[in-house]
Length: 251
Image (cartoon, rainbow, N blue to C red; front, top):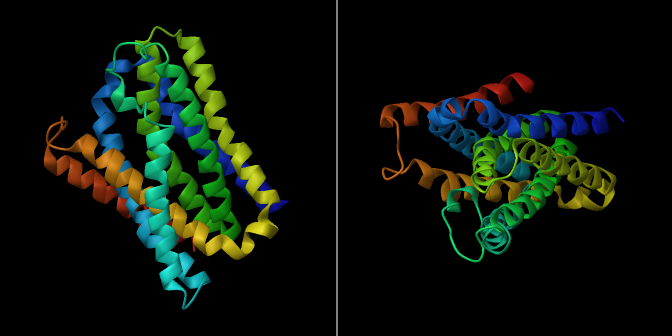
């Protein structure tokens, strides 16, 4: 039960950290927007470092001599998440300028997509913990890092469409906590999942690579950049360094 408790604890912590920026937006909108590029830059480094320094090496270690399947699973994570985002999460926060018939449906569709996304995050965190506690902690923090800027966008969309602050807060708390449900389901299915843990870790790595490369890096492209390139690079490297240091001290 100790492992189960850690999974629940870090799933909740990851969910709480992920909505911290959105909650800040309700009270200090100008401050949060000012630093949003910094959050994005750090998240890019953290996601890439977790994928390449933790998840893929761990998957290869668990399945020696099976590298081709591991990398195929990682590729499946990239392609699969692209399809998922295209079908369910197409009303991503940076698409909030749409008009017309879907205008008022956007927040509800965004909420539905994020709830599915958060459930998957819970599966990801629990799978990492079932491999090792240090990997689970690093993965949970990486999940929080990439959700933080996205949740700021979610809050912005809902407020833009006239939702009350209290409603925005509570629906996002509910949505974020579905990661606990995903984690619990994964823990109790661990006997079935155990032989597939290397592939699940590689799949997670692919998802993290996709989010960093397809969702976050375009947000700090020259067309959107609101900060100096040196600051962006430093924060990306800081995200990588934070994961490396955390992993080193947890081992």
